[in-house]
Length: 110
Image (cartoon, rainbow, N blue to C red):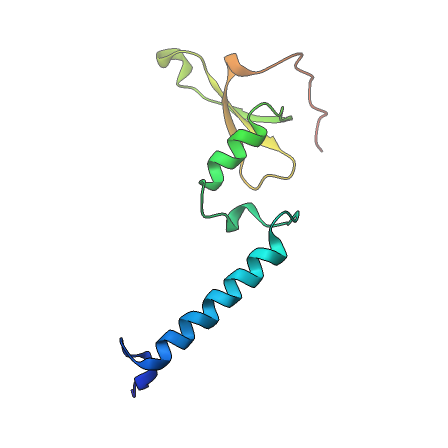
């Protein structure tokens, strides 16, 4: 594999490359500063995506159907329920003492 001399440290064209990069960064700054933009949570570098979700949605109430109940409650304290929530790939596991409001009976699935 051959390395171009232009990529070697101290090569005269590296200064040009840095100047071009600085102009590109400045152009992006002036174009984007103050604009409203869109992006995916998974593309955020800082803060951690999980902390973003906690900040935005910790008080959102989820609703789902209980699929199962833990059997460890007899020994270790309050039981946990396994809940299927629409739109989520995996079920949620929640302590029974954290359930809110009235509990409706789910329709019988046939």
